[in-house]
Image 1 (cartoon, one colour):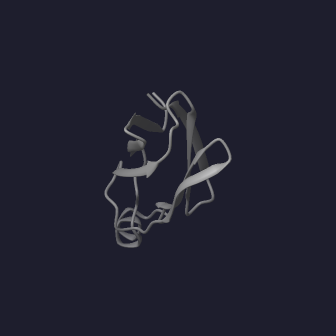
Image 2 (tube, one colour):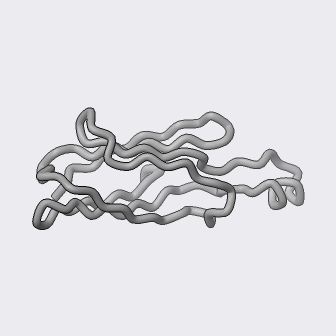
Length: 100
């Protein structure tokens, strides 16, 4: 299993996306209690080819293994959707899924 589960489906020119990222999302408080460094996803970008369709900064207030949805306009059936997230430690994960 990868670090993300991605579902992307286009209907009538709208692409609906669901993503689940595998991440502990340790807040500052949780990390302090566990004697670890805080670490959570801080930025997410989604692209279809070279076009950015979603770009967001996130915070420590997302749950462990966060799930989120977004949608965008485009006739992109069959094209590749690429999602990248970066966390506080600087680790970056990129995964792709073909839009159905």
